[in-house]
Length: 135
Image 1 (cartoon, rainbow, N blue to C red):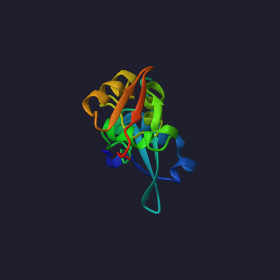
Image 2: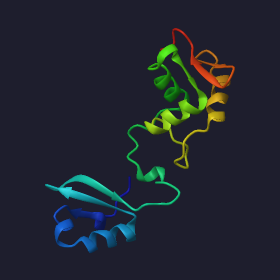
Image 3: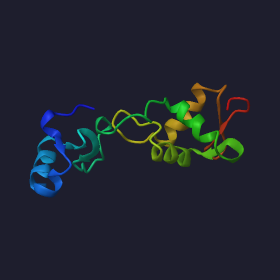
Image 4: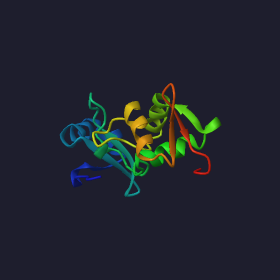
């Protein structure tokens, strides 16, 4: 995550000069608030189309879609979920995001089963199952 030097602001500035903090957010899109000279909070400018993937700390979004599917399916009963519910859960946990920062569509989830038949199985009714022995 790229941060401009003028976006690093001491936390106490919130109390003393709130307008300055928000003017920097407006200008740069984000501010990193420092406590004891260490990053403590990030204030991001809201974007009507959602937050760009670049503005998210991507520690959880480095999985491939099939890896994210495996993680979620291994934790549910019968290792089976509806494709749209699976897409929602993966997005909710931020395990995988498309390059535009949006969630994978259920059709993309279903298509991934065809590319990894040893790992995933597409069942009737748009249900996706993690194959036995792959947990």
